[in-house]
Length: 406
Image (cartoon, rainbow, N blue to C red):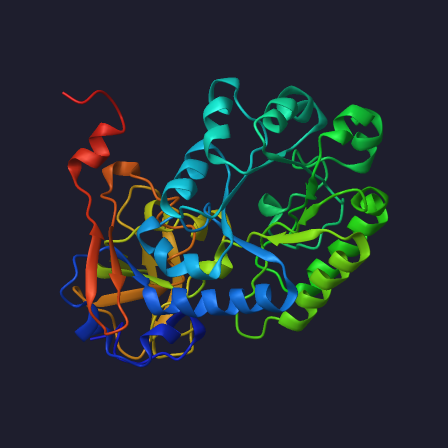
């Protein structure tokens, strides 16, 4: 059998500590997500160390990880949650109770704003117009009010879809927009500024960005109470330059006298989840050997196509690294439902168990039921090696999101 014969010491599988995945997961129904409780705790300890040494406050960006059953694992290490709208704000308030709730949305709806005020502590607006429309209501409700700025400093390559500083971006207020639209009355509503420019990046990119923020908005920041560095900081990735991050935080605090916030999503749940799948069929088209899995890139790991990227696979190598090379694809009708090309010590066979890594982030919160594909169940891997089912899904979950319940 191929697939899971070899151990794997790469960071995405560190939490398995060389254990045999057959003995851990053989009885689980596939496809399924498995959230690693100990790796979440490991990430939390790294993040809390940064907060303790610098005085910054770190939030969980729920857009990347919103499996609230595991919030109690992360809560001791974090100041609270960050939301992208009403539902995430409510989730954070309910499931990480007593912690801060920050929210940013590119544009808020009148019909939702009053309810949002019940859950959020900090409300960040995207434009001077949104600040003018809602800022006074937020202030009167006792909320801390912020504005997202765009420092017009792009540090990303190859992932334009995730670059808020790309030309023509709708995200954040540029200095030119500030100078044109921000009246003294609007400025008086603000308690802080927010920028988010990074995606899976190290502290060197933050350092470059912070210099651009200083150049464009430094004169304003000295009048603010807080500055939010946004997300995209890969703080818990092995090799990340934590010392440089801490210098950036301390520099901002000393220069402008602000409370610094960070709101990473991936860093909270990095290397803390897996997607288990089984081989349904093996075929060959010309020189390409193909394995059809019961897991779909399009449905169950959409960032594989959107980013795009090739997820790590337990015990597998790069194409041509090992003797048997296979292209892994999902069972949907989408021709492009391809996870990637991998090599194995032995040929794959029907029924083989495969385990993808880094599946706690942007997976359960982005998956879908295209083609009527069932949603994978969600399990937790406890520190003692036992697994527990948190949620299973069936036909009704597919049907009820499309129409009336009869």
